Amino acid sequence: MRFIETLEKLRLYLGSKPALTPEEKELLGKIREDLNYFPTCVIHRDDLIEYAYDAHLIKDNEMVTLGKKIGIDSWEQLSSVRLPVIGYASNLPVACCPLCGEQPRFEHGYWYCENVDCQREWSCMKYVWLKYTDKTAFLFGCDIGFISKTNRTNEMSLYLPVDLFRMHFGKEPEKEDIFHIFKYGDMNDIYGLREDGFILEKVTDNKGLERFGPRAYWLSCYPKD
Image (cartoon, rainbow, N blue to C red; front, side):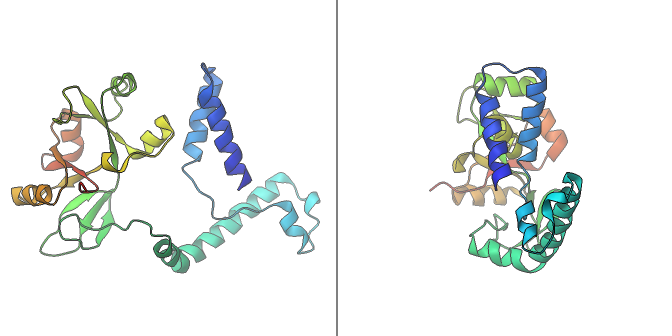
């Protein structure tokens, strides 16, 4: 998809410049935001010629409207039938309860285990654990992310939402650094998860407690190998 590749090249170009004008900074932020969306299809004027349309007489705004309508139609058909099949074939990660392995339902930003004997909840949003650097200190100074007091380091570290990590760092996080918020039922949950090789850290900072509540732990998405 050429326009996605062009946006990515422009992002890399702007990101490599030693200094940006305010307009360039605003443009870079918009590009990073737009690259979170992935089109279901792309249509070119040349695609219309084989259907006998005089494509080069079509105005740009008419092409935009056509593309949107085709995208909506494609998504409705894809999501209802094909997406689960394609997702399975592509080995996309499927949400499951970290305690019992049952599939959950999604509601208000959280996954809820459907197992009546479990019913635990954890966040859909994932967070990246970042050790202390000048950049993480800057992010924290801008009130972005949550403080970590883990014993993995003697310095302040940070949990950053994964979408903001991709935006600010321009790469994918390491598997072992990805966490989500887990709300335990009793302390046996914590002991059991640690025995299974998961890393847990209680949420203790005021911002995290206000956002996630007193039962919240940072839980690694993957157990240690």
